[in-house]
Image (cartoon, rainbow, N blue to C red):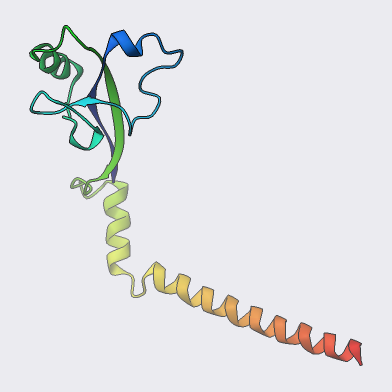
Length: 138
């Protein structure tokens, strides 16, 4: 099952230079400046990740240069795969899983067989059309 996860990055910028720009400083996330776990300004690859906004804010205000820079919290969302939790026996997913486990052929094998048959039909149609084309040219 896919689960949407969220974490926060702290983007930092110098307000004397970047507040005068007509566009936001973070228009390119890869090129932005972030705060690392060691309280240093770094790129996105070494940026510290935080589970909540409050945790990120507390980390930023513990930084010695927090008065010199401004910050913006950047939420990052991503999908991760987690195994399905155990379902009770009467749940529809449990019923489907028991049906799939007891079937002699997997659905994937049936799909492959159908695909092979379709390819054979296409090959027959192509050879038939080439044969008719050759007759018409004569």
